[in-house]
Each structure stands twice: as C-alpha cells, then as structure tokens.
Image (cartoon, rainbow over all chains, first blue to last red; front, side, top):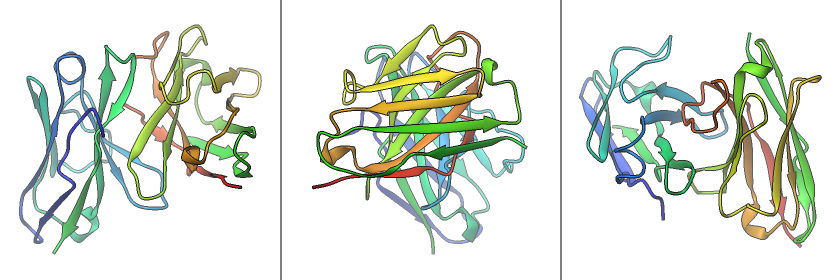
Length: 110
Length: 123
C-alpha cells in the first residue's frame, strides 16, 4: 500500500480534460514539493512536472500541476491518444526519510 | 545528450548477490544526486536509494536497508547498487535516475532516467 494515494485508473476521450489526484499527509505532500511522472511500459519514466507546477522543457502546456495542503493533482487538457500511459506522483517524506511514490494511475484515452 | 545506462541485471537465486551499475554521460556527474528506483512486475514505481552529489548523504528504503548498498565512482561517472541477501520480492526492473542538486538526498524530481535493467530472483 502506497503512502501517496492515487486512483488506479482514469479515462477520457480525445480533447477532454482529465485530472489525476494524489493524496498524502503532513510529512510528505504538505511539507515537500510534488513531482509527476509519465511512464509507458518498457520505457524510461519521464519527469512531467516538478515543484508542484513546473514543467520541464519539452512538456506541453496541456499538462499542469497544483498542490493544496496534503493533496496534489495533475491535469491534462486537450487529451491526446499519446497521453495514454501510467502516471505517478512522488515526493520526499520527512518521516520516512525517503522518496514516496503514489501507486500510479493508468490513463486510458477512449 | 544525457545518457544513463544500467547494466548487471540477471537471474539470481534467493539469498544471492548482484551488483548493478549505471554509467552516465553528458553532464558533470558530481553535480547530481543519484537514485535507484525499481518496478516489480505488475506494480508501480518504488524508490530504493539515493546518494548525494558528494556521496556524503545516503538514504535507503526500509525494504532494502541492510541488504543493498548504493555507491558512486567519480572517476568513471558511474553509480552502483550492491544487492545482497536477495529475495523473490526484489524481482523488478531497476532504473537509475538523477537530479541536479548539490549536497542533498531529499529530492524526488528525477530529470533523467536509464532504460532499466531486469533482475529476477528465483530458485
């Protein structure tokens, strides 16, 4: 069971807006920045969002992130078929003295 | 171009040992916190260990503490993971990753990743 809680699945049709949530606690999300990864099976994970809402170079502005209290979310607007992947949130946990990942959300583009 | 490449994975018996390596290129190795992350079959990403840019600070997940050792070689710009007392539940694809950060391990934004090396622990 992951320290950070994500819905196991999400879906949307092309062009729609989808939001993926990540719920944690005081020692992780409340105290530290949240990062998001996109992962396609058999490939290297890709950093999608860092410091809650910052996009690395090359990540489309269709992707946005936010954090409030002990929760964070990743929003994808203008959904595209290529967005179909697994998405993970991650942050440092002060109590565990380590990085914690969410369980992952499998996004399906219908 | 930034590259991280893992090697050393394979099949090992329970209780056995394996040493993974990650060679890096493209940027100053000594400016990055280096990390190992794994993904077991059908499971999500799991952080294993991180080592600071200077090697001074190291942190491990409880599940591997006392069995795994992370280290870095500045002369060869490489990262290693010595895995001892391996268990069936250590079966996973192991990724190395890095973060531009000086002197800290408290990072979770891994900007670059390798393609992973598979480790299978089975009798």
